[in-house]
Length: 158
Image (tube, rainbow, N blue to C red; front, top):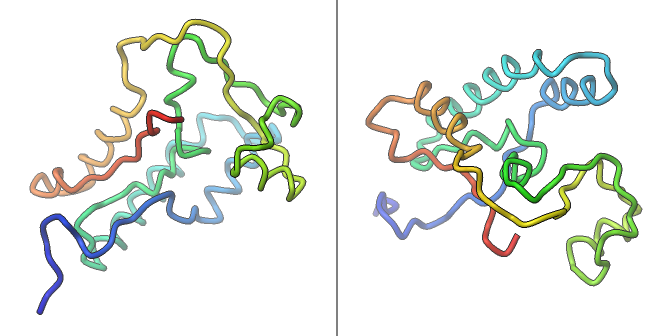
């Protein structure tokens, strides 16, 4: 008996795929001002193409870009809204330690590199920050697989 090809699937992929070392190194170099942001898209493009090929070779139906264009799973969603500001090196005191994810980070003595804070009325700008990610995925998979492209969106509770 073969695995079902239509929902409900036997398994679902949640979360980012492990980022390749060269992508992590490129992001680190940008953070440390050893490289510029404009060097990143070509590295991301190659990493995404490689991970999509692996998924196709494994026979995965839902194809993910691994969230490789994002530092965090929410990507550019919150900074693209009015009412949010992205801040670098936030003080750990601004976080609510009773939230399980935050508590785990704080217990591990991990300080986030950046976060977004609400500093005004939240409004959508009318432009999705995920369209370009979807369009790139469309450019590297056959048209008959476009319906299998999987992009992670920030859940409403975030």
